[in-house]
Image (cartoon, rainbow, N blue to C red; front, side, top):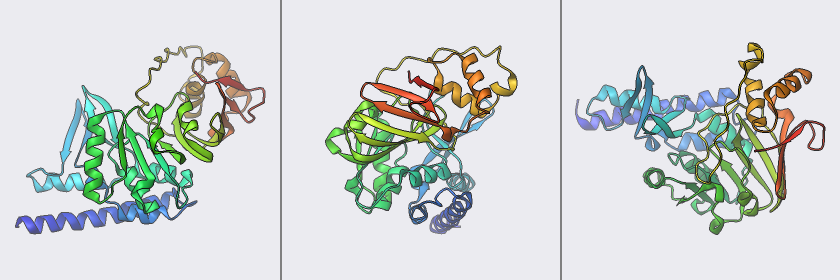
Length: 327
């Protein structure tokens, strides 16, 4: 079979695999609240943003490459690019630096961002550029989207991927914790890296009423910005695990000793969320007592308030009895 025929087969496979992914996301209910995102996922070709990726195997990672001379390897690469799974895209000394998130989680986050026509959006964590392309497609105007990442090699490859797919949002190399003030003010901020607290710089770059959606602990916090010093919101029910925000110096979390806590709690995903949210503020035994007393609360009962220099997490009520500073 000639090269042209092989390329056509790969193009056909891309179209079929992308359609299957869209059906899978549709069935998950990820964009039920904002079905306009279906058209974006149908239109934006994910494989252009992952020309190679790494698959975990025994003893390390295996690299899948879209330019492999072996047609079977190229087919595996293409099928993998459209699986509803995160893809490791950049490693350093065996450590994951960047990835393309699970598409159904991306769809859920984009729907929860509640983007409206004309919104100016800042993305923290450029990754492969795929998320920025989805945003640019949804908004229909590249200049409304800004994506920032600390690593020049990440922003350069994201810029190339976006151009290959026909999108040209602003791609900025810099510390995401500081935002991108020269491109603001923003109506929406979305982060694709885990925070330990909400950077004040983001609030200062937002219009009143702006929405911020970001991973924190092992959940997703959705904040409404009142003004440059105040924001508040609750966690979504969705679990979320992302690489940490890099940049501004943040202390390494101390190890937590859980020996006295029953295994049923230690292994429970919602208790692990509470531990991450209270780390450095509440002793694990106290957190366990709260968790038991409140009947293993779901994520959406928790929230975060930012008020001037103060920032705290809470259960049920920002002014209630269960509140603790974020470290």
